Amino acid sequence: MDQFWTDILSFAIKTTKRVGETLVNDFGKLQATRKEDGTLVTKADQWSDREIREAILTRFPEHGVLTEETTHIFPKNDWCWIVDPIDGTTNFTRGIPIWGISLGLLYQGTPVFGYVYFPQVQQSYYGYWYGNSGLIGPTGAYCNGELLQTSLDQPSLNHLFNLCARSIDVLKNPFPCKIRMIGVASYNILLVASGAALGGVEATPKIWDLAAVWVILQAAGGIFISLSPEPIFPLKVGENYGQRSFPCLVTSRDELVPVFKPLVEFLGN
Image 1 (tube, helix red, strand yellow):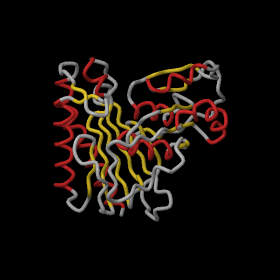
Image 2 (cartoon, rainbow, N blue to C red):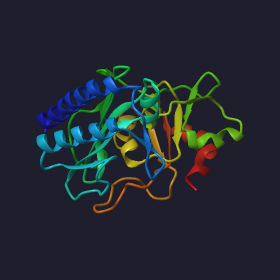
Image 3 (cartoon, rainbow, N blue to C red):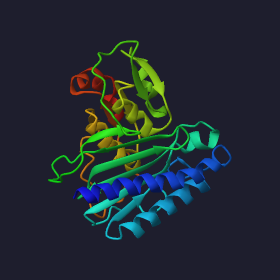
Image 4 (cartoon, rainbow, N blue to C red):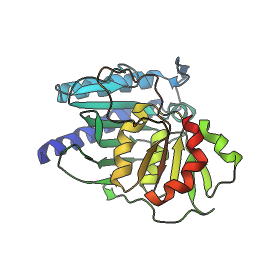
C-alpha cells in the first residue's frame, strides 16, 4: 500500500506541475464565458480538465473521474478522482495570482487524499485522511513538504476569518475576527489548514471545490461542518453533482464551532 500512495502523490505532483506550466502562459490573457450555473469558464479550464482527465485514465485506468468541465455523474468505481481544473477562474482571467489546480481522490465515495497546486505562487498543498475507510498509509497535511497544523489561537480582531462573495450577509452582525475574501474556495479553506485563518465559510461550493481540501483540512487538525442537513460524503453512485452546492463552515478546531456556526448557519437554508 505504501507504493500505491507514493505513486498517487508522484502522479499529482507531476501532472499539476505540467498542466500548471502551460496555464501560467495564459494567465490574465483569456476572456471567460458564463456557464448555466453562473460560474465562469475559459479555454484554459477546458484544456486543463481534458489533460488531467486523460492523464488519470492513462495512469489509473481502473479509477473513475468526475470533473468540473465534463462528467458530473459519480461513477461506481471504488477509486474516483474529482478534479477542479482551475479553481479561481475569475482570479486567473483578471491577473490575480491566487488560483489553483485541485485533485481529490475518493475511496468508496469519501475523499482520502487531496492535492492542490497554486502555480503562480508556487504552493503545493496535500494531505491524507482515511476516516473510517479501513485504509492505511501516510498521514498528515503539508505545504511544500512542510507539515501543516491549524491554529490554537482564540478569536480576536487580530485573527482572520474567510468569506466568499455569497456569504457577505454574515457581516450584518458584529463578527469576532477580521475578514478576508480570497475568491478561491480551496484557498479559503487551506488558509485555515495552514493556521493563517481561524475559520471560513463557503455558501455555494461545488463538489470539485471541496473534495481535495476536505482531506487536507482535517489532516491538519481542522473541522469541516456541513451547513446542510445531509452530510456531503460519501457520494452516491449514479448521482449528478453538477448543480449541487454544499454550504460549509470550516474552523481551526472543534471549540470554535459554537463561536462561528451561529453567525453563518443561515447560509445553509
